[in-house]
Length: 450
Image (cartoon, rainbow, N blue to C red; front, side):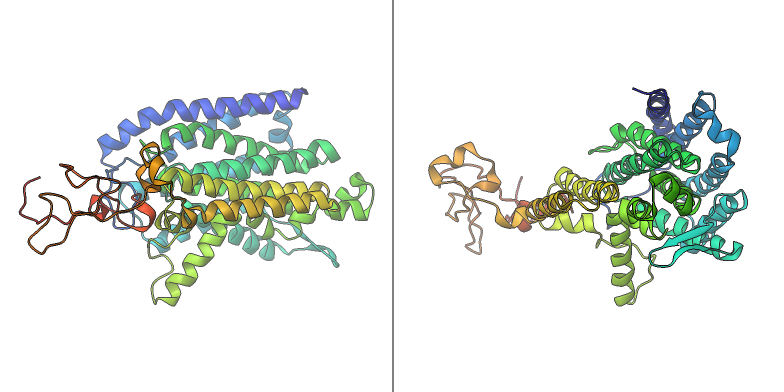
């Protein structure tokens, strides 16, 4: 294992450890500060849960950058580039804005303005898009105004994409961690594979981002003990965007062509990042797709694009019958497939095996996605060995359970003399992840004794 890899692992471990250790005290602080909003109609959780998890994640970010600045191979990133300082400045602004929103609530337009200011601060310190590699045209240099507008747009889109997908326990942190791992592989290959120093900051940003997510994830898995809130979701979105801007808009494609051995090889190496706006779409394609669908849906219904609802992709997974944990794992699967598929295609886009592998895994993902539609039913003789959702529903009259209207209770594999027949969950395929417990079928009179 090379020295740079060990230093990256050390930075990753320190970032994750600091984030993990800070999350517990931050949770107690959030409870004491009253950062536990009431449960809203669109929420999945049933008990008030503290927010402000972004405080611990920001502490991990600072610790990771501090450690990296004292390591032999990584301190050159701080000596030859102002991008780490630009990232820290923008992250501090977006973090403060998120903390205020988690505690008191901030208007959507004010948050949008704060996101643009944070992106502008990074641009002023050199973290901006300088040129765009366009296929068939070549390298297109951007004016300062064009680079600023494009950078701000990319940062805002990425921040809101991550913020929109933060709807289930462990979903946003896990998906961003997967995207950061794929992005690290791509940036590390450009730095040490082709010797391009301009890719070093993006590599460091990816490692720190992975550490932040890994450290917070144990506290955020279902059932979550704390939420990252906007202070966390906007923070990790900004770090992801900073890495995309760094590796896409700062790396000279002509230099990459010289290092790669020719124009054709350079074109193959730059396949996933021809245009900076495509890079976030490849590494966090699922959140961006959810963002676009949410805007179209809300606008079509005559609502504000910032109005919250229960139409996100993760909500739909729950509605068709997936459990909370399985819905999160399915979203993980699609994020990993898209992110690592793009990286693999950039390494060798002439291989049909990679394309066939992506197609095959996509088919597997579709089967998993539609699995509740094809729930098998066990034979009657084996019903006692399987969970209730796999048993045949039989409507039989139950002694003493018939109401005044003559309607009987639904039982599953029960007998007529059972005192308390097993209740069948309501909703599609017994899904109970959304809503209250009234989704269970209960036809007894309201004034009956329980």
